[in-house]
Image (cartoon, rainbow, N blue to C red; front, side, top):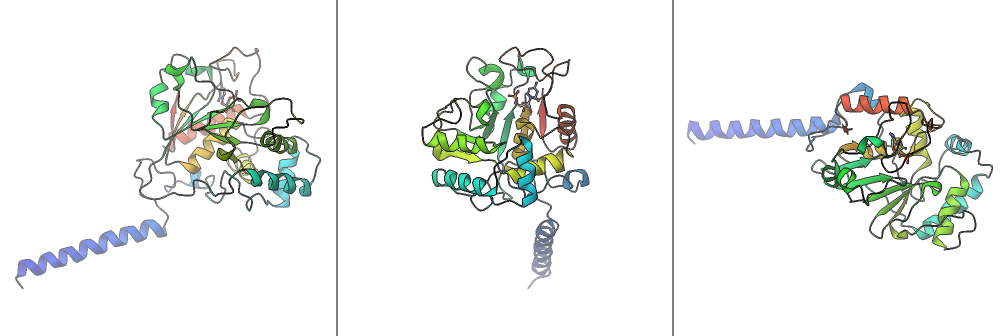
Length: 303
Ligand code: C5P
């Protein structure tokens, strides 16, 4: 074998070891390869004390079983009196009607799923963000935020609509409903929707039941405690949605968040009463956290 050949072979072996070493190191130290150019899990203590992948946003029948502490926390949100047995019964009924499937636990080095999270802020007016929003693989819209008539600023694609009973609107056949329950009657509302007998809550909506997902109370508590350090009575639906996006997507773009100059959560699609402020939610703390996430390159904030 010529000197040239053995030298080449040595270099090849060295190269293979370096690549193998890097791969092992990144796996052992859990430093992901950021194919999206945006790395959630980087070595950032501020982020890693908050972000925890063991808290999955969506519930399955198994993960609906939460600790007594979490259940008490959830019950206190809106003074639910009924107990664990009733919760179990309703959740059981729900999973007889919706898929009992672990969703979006498919993180992989080569995955590059882009989420557009669209809040309802008035700062979307004349933004022309529509095409950029629709460019996301997932477009998550919250509560009543409409698209019709606002396409230029908010786009027209909706893959997920995040709602709770009081904020529910009709959802088209190909869009996922992501349902947040803040009290027992909310879970019962979902059951009554399936059964088409809406005795409990007057309001009824259209939705494709095979695409319904239910947010986990454990995840809601995690957002309140770990991300918001208990600011506000509980997190806003919008803030929980953007933390969910960090959990299920590799790149997160955020639009339509931020109060008006008077500190009110104004809407792009309607005038709201003055001094609405941010209700029971820690609006300022949520927005500061959002800005911090942007500063640390964990998401892109537009608006
Ligand atoms: O007002 P609504 O709750 O429907 O808005 C959806 C979400 O958008 C809120 O939960 C909040 O997180 C966010 N929002 C905001 N600034 C506004 C309006 C809404 O950050 N001006």
